[in-house]
Image (cartoon, rainbow, N blue to C red; front, side, top):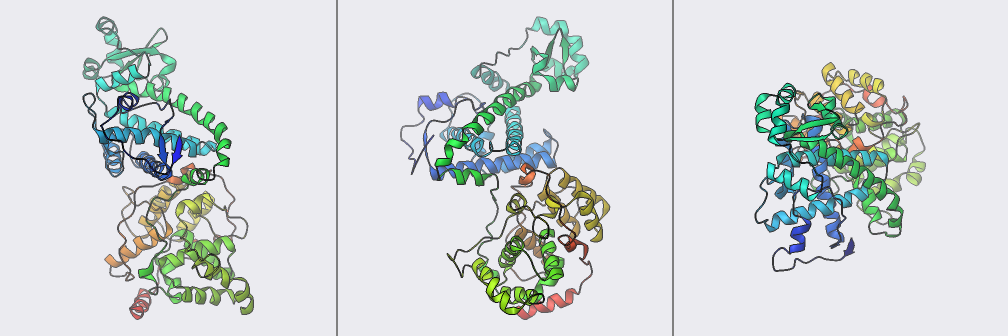
Length: 522
């Protein structure tokens, strides 16, 4: 795949070779794309498919695969991407240009993410699972003629059994399924090793080493084929990846895709600057800070110091919620000088604070860390307070901290379950619901960014008459619920010093005092 500056659409409609290449809306992605695309398209295509795969993962966590809620959620999310034309279930006839563009996007974007997600076993496992779920969802939406065409195009050789053979085994088929489904379904005779999932679930009739598979269950066989092919392709791509190391245009982009944050940008919150002062931080940390920032705040208050990783994570978060540079200097100085000489603070630490605000060095306006960056980067070590409590905290210790905050037992169980399964952002979302008295029967809040957590909390405070007067950024972003399940689930436990944050949080605090502070800033 060659990379150039721009790509221009050629007039004259869809070429015959393009129609042949994308003759079916589904494919096994056996052949890589050979056309020329721009670097901008390269990144855009990758991000669009990543949004779809994140939505697939979220749907799998929240709903039963194949259920009405599962299908409805995926349809809604995919309609918000450039893949929306692929939701069409019609097959045959003239293919419109927008649908052909979507098939092209589907083809190219798959191979881009294949490059990005082949680098480690965890990334490969995540990518494989989401691609399989996406294929199942799309295949089950297709009609019978589309199924038959897909089998023919991919030379799979599966053919429906004759009516005479179906009549012969009809009593056995009815024993494995309902009579109504048996009557309307066509059946395929395949070797039992190709339908192990169906055999395991006792959903097929076995005879002399062959399984009789209903057309409704054909997706299970195709998924087995697709899994084998894609697993092999990912391994081959991983071996070829070192050849890309010489291309400094693509490698950084590919390495960053697995950690890509797809939500709102919290870099320049100019409208908030000045509304948050250093005196408010203590109270705000109890009401609207996510657990990761509560932990950092309590670590700072206890030790009068944070290591570099903690200062970066916490300092950029405070910048993002609207703490000005002057107030930030006041806040950090007031705490650090409790354990060191003021001159030492000025010489060793004040530069870093000004640097985060773009006033030193290359004067870059640094962005607050997203959940993905906190989870995947810079694992905390001994004496550190940064990181994600749901990712880096031991399960028993996490439950202990949640109980100390008077979180309900059923919510603690859900949070612990999400954290154990690697869905750290869903765990944070459930914590948000529980700490803000939102019903947890159907988890809806997905947290993708600590500053998003803060603003959502402030929106709820406003609804209850207790809210900072900051602009409404909109509701919770639900594109990416648990991007971090790709991450390795083992990490160094946080020390007692690191984890003092959640233990010392209090549920009762003087809201009137916070309100009066807010009024003074108006």
